[in-house]
Image 1 (cartoon, rainbow, N blue to C red):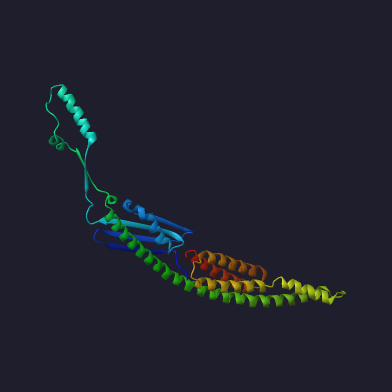
Image 2: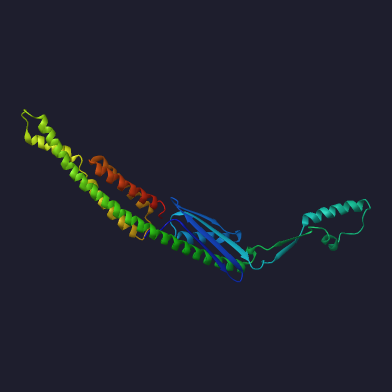
Length: 297
């Protein structure tokens, strides 16, 4: 089964505590390159979220983003600004020494000073029950997003597989035509060589058997039967690969390079204009197949 490396999914999950929004997208890449962006409050479960992705995605550049919106703040923390308090006390001590003020600094005096109290929201980590609830929600949302992404990659992969299968059938047919054309070209070459030898040996004593063998050896240099046989084997292998359950992108890329190499050899050995045209057509189809395979997991 072929999977595309391109996909996109988004999932929003609501519960009593918060709304979790997950976006995941993937593009082609040589290896699995997973980028994760999540709130600091969920940093502890990042390895689990990565595992959810890598369980279904083995190759591609994947970007996972998770946004968190709490329905209610987890509470506040109030602290006295110690540094400001010490500075005020020091200033008052100097003022008392100069007789400018009298009496101690009271709590009421402090509360009237801007920024005397530091008020901040409690971190989510401070509420263990809340953190666990958010983690459960995040895991669920990410799992669903990854499943949706995988489904999209499978669907696109089915289109790619159909296209590869169709093109493979076409190029296999072209190679069979190359084989027929090469056989015809080799037979024609033998006739031309025989005619040429007949012209050159006029009036000479020659070994007819040796001449015939040399003609056959010369014509055999244009024999592409081995290349055609290997190409047929590659076609069979490709058909098996695209139906296999495991990722096959790299194997397909290598196999198509081998198929292209065999066609190049056929073109260099075989003779005839029609063969050259078939070789060009086969190479064009193989190049289109390689372009498709670059996006296969």
